[in-house]
Image 1 (tube, one colour):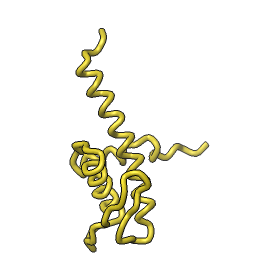
Image 2 (image 1 turned 180 degrees about the horizontal axis):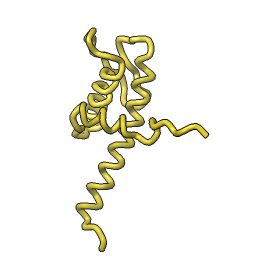
Image 3 (image 1 turned 180 degrees about the vertical axis):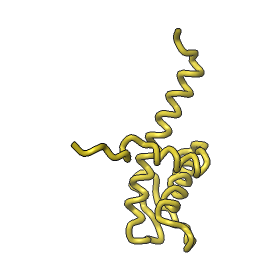
Length: 99
């Protein structure tokens, strides 16, 4: 039985959202290597890095990814905990057993 149009679009949007989150997170995480004050993304522009001593690089990258997508792309993003789960469950990050 075929999916309804709504079910198809929801599934398509979620899958593409997850890919976008993973890709942008990886870029932002690399840009935060030397603790810069600003991050310059070639397409989305310049963003101030929040200064909070309690935040790890991973948490800062999550926050900046969410901010970039909300402000520049106009997307309503999931909560930070949901984004962290999406990133943790990415097939690209799972280790493969050695042969």
